[in-house]
Each structure stands twice: as C-alpha cells, then as structure tokens.
Image 1 (cartoon, rainbow, N blue to C red):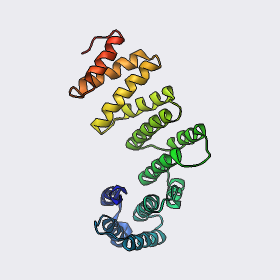
Image 2: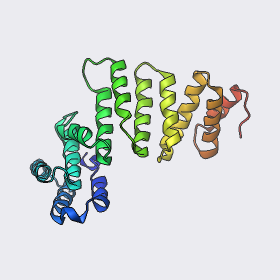
Image 3: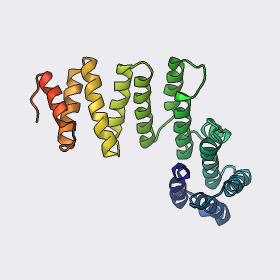
Image 4: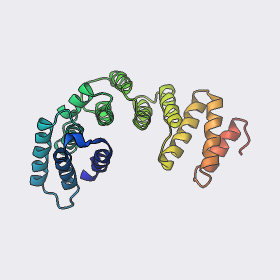
Length: 234
C-alpha cells in the first residue's frame, strides 16, 4: 500500500522545486523520510517515526517547498494508514496554497473520499460539492483525473448520463495518458452519447476508438453500433 503514497512524485518534485535558498537540510530530511517509506521492511514503528519527522519538518519549514511536500506526504499517510478521510494537512494545503501542485493533488484526494464517504449526505449534495472543488484545479493532468472521477460518480449515483458524458468528453479533450483508460472512455462516450441522442458525438467517439485501438476486443461491438446509427465503419 505504501507504494501508492506518491513517494516518487515527492522525490521528483524535490528535484525540480526545492531551491538552494531553503538550505539543503530540509530537502535532505524530506528525501530521507520519503525514501524510508519505500523500504520493503518498513515496520509500524518506523512509519510512526517517519510521521513524527514529517510533522517536525512542517513545524520548522511551514512555508518552504520541502515543508509543503512534507505536509502533503503526511496527509496522504494519514489517509492510507490511519483511515483519516480529510487529514488536517490536506485541508491546510488546499486552503492556504490552492494553486500549488501538491495542494491540487490533495484536493483530488479529498474529492474522491468525499464522493464515496460513509455519511448522510445525499448524492446530489456530494456531486455539487465535488463540482465546486473541481473548479479550483488548474493543472491539466489533475483536471483530467477530476473529470474521469466525476464521470464515474454521475454513473454511480443514478446513471446520470448527460453530466457523465460532459465530464468524460472533457477528460478526453484534455488528454488521457493511459491507453487502456482512454480506450474505455472513448467507448463510454460513444455509448452515453448514443443513449442521450447525441449522434454526432457517438459517431465521432466510435470512429476514434476504431482507428486508435484496432486490436481491442470491442472492435466488432463498436462497428455494430456504427451500423445501427447508419454509419459505415472506417
């Protein structure tokens, strides 16, 4: 599980964003803590010690790039290891530095937890709150992740096809790095567009899928969809 806490992202971020003006010690401390979390033999005691080191770094360097990175990493650890859906570190990051890349990444993690968290909030309320939070995202990659998540959420909560289609089209427009995910999204867009009466979008998405993924097992299904719409396959 610890391999999914964005250690590589933090280390890469440090390599480009932590300036010499901050001094080498803060960056070195964060690198050491991040590297420790990737150790296969990491024990619970080691993890607790690392959390303490991250908290100390935040206290000592609250506004530095290393301090912000430590804040994100500690918040993610609290989510994954302690079961805290909305860690205070994420709340502080998104409140105080909303345009920072790590704050925006924290916002996406908060959004995903809020969409499906246990509680009494109605689906419509969850979706509205997520739409508002998504407006704070400016980084294209994270906006793409946001739109994919919202597309799934609108289908999950009542098979709401029109808003799901809107978000999936936005994600495709931004660009989807994963070929497998993009193939799925193109098929989803085609299906949702067909079911909502948007013939032009359905045909366009089906054709893109056929052209870009010729070996996908869904080729014949998509060709049949085009034929049903009165379109010849490419």
